[in-house]
Length: 504
Ligand code: NAD
Image (cartoon, rainbow, N blue to C red; front, side):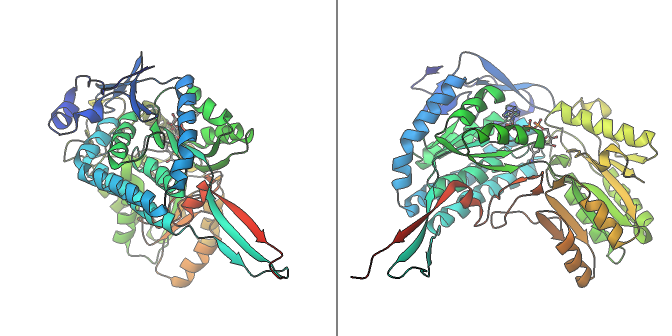
């Protein structure tokens, strides 16, 4: 890989991305490169970044090698002493500047998100402010990473617990939130005093590289925040093998999460995992129907369904089942499918065609087993990555969609009779990320929220994420928490110090 003093030139932009990105100030956001040890580097071979809606190549990025990754780990390790040595308020100030730059360039970043990820522009804009919020949140959390003083059990002793940064942290991030999943991890790690090496998803490298440019402009020192794009297996191997990488944070599929957990065991790293979801969305028959339908629309179709919080099993009590299905179907058929840069679009393309294929397979399988299928009207010829928003009603527990995460705009509705039954069905999953409960009864809400085996529970709401909350799952949905006061702990070691012999 050749190091270049100047930033490499941008490849030609095409399609809608050209119209939108070409007019914006930051053309350097689409220059293909990696940031290693404070320098922008260019590889010999580039990988194409595609607009998932059209298949157009919007940019090419350098493909980094395992040797580049080793170089980045060396640089991160070298930068650790200086970064951890800064006062927390200085690290916080740099994180705040980075957040301000993200907000100042929100429009360019949002267009980039939509261009390579596909989500509607309004959602992309929200992702930028959501993502910047993690930097602001952790800027403050770093200043409050308190230890403890323990009432001593030994005469003449003072017992202290200190929180100290772990060392180099690795972040392997997904394509569904290509900005926020980086800042949620990096904000916590950097605030704790740890340098971070990011390996973004190959589908969405431009957002990661744009964040790296802004981090540099904000004053993050060389080696402290690095981004390397390339083959996931080749680039993750050095991260797993190198004992200097002390923390690994991953968001993505449960399958890859298991592999990384195994790989990290050899050097006993601190691992945090945000993996798949399979959220139950439970609607009891005492609710106001319109509110429940609105909640189900938001919980199912945000990010075009490509969201680990997405409602995957919508259980509706039999008393209101038919009325709910009718209203929900009407709302779904109103959704507009199209390019995310088109202002009328509600549902963009799937970022990966494998996700669209999985949606179609689930619809077909459910239909053959007797589910009712209602789809939004739309142009099927938009392309392979598009899935028309679809309602599957009368879904039964033996259908694939009842046990397998969809990650697309397909809503499965299942009838249920009573609380005990629906709780058992909701909990009968290997996943345990998010659950939603709609009821007007406070006693029932308290009971169900106590018994449901999920890490995050929304009662009468589909919107509950943000920097202050501990994001994470139970069971095979993951390990550890991101955001909140807990998120920074994933990057810190606890040290117990006993001062003895204090009495002469
Ligand atoms: P994935 O797990 O393969 O990809 C996520 C990240 O892991 C990417 O950065 C990818 O490059 C990296 N990766 C993939 N294989 C790897 C390996 N062997 N070693 C190291 N890194 C590796 O996810 P996917 O295939 O892109 O999507 C499949 C499914 O995963 C989705 O349908 C969805 O169910 C789930 N997913 C969940 C989230 C989430 O937010 N929890 C995000 C993305 C995908």
